[in-house]
Image 1 (cartoon, rainbow, N blue to C red):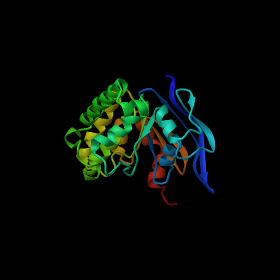
Image 2 (image 1 turned 60 degrees about the vertical axis):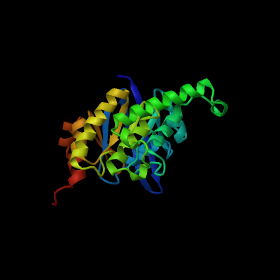
Image 3 (image 1 turned 90 degrees about the vertical axis):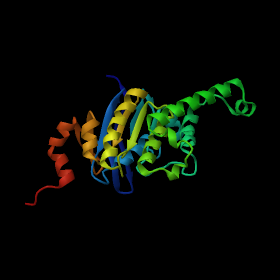
Length: 256
């Protein structure tokens, strides 16, 4: 299949530390892939490169053939890449509904004067945004909490709200940074089905970072493994589980 997101030889160093080195990855439309590795392996750095938080010192990133290198975060979001964060980045003092509406504003077609004069185009856009936001709240099990402040949500609901806000930007590629962090076993089971459902319902391609191997091995079709910024394995969940380099990265090697 043709590549939707194509990353080739991506590298960045901070001082003498090579955080990511010659990283390559291809996502076809509709893929659900995982990016794993021990703490400090460079996973979130890859996400920061893909979303314009950091600029790569080498390598290329393309979305649908368009080069993303050098674009600012808002430009990459507009191009079709959205993300969640390992630590919540919600607008804590805004309501659940307003958090999702903010994500939807990326696709607003009308300008300032249309908003001031409340033109027909403005009203149509607002109606469309409202309908999409309500759909997202239903998908993520949050319609009854639409008027609550984001800061007052239980942790699991906050994680789902971040996903809803990211999807409100209507992305082609969704990057999920440890979506199961802090969830109990029941919430993690529900999350697996939610991620599968999101891919089908919104026709979005997903790359996720996750430490919970049960989640990764269950839902991801291919997995890339990083260790100290270097790719040490790529393959199906079964292939990665059997790879001796992956086992050594997570568990260490036996003493001589």
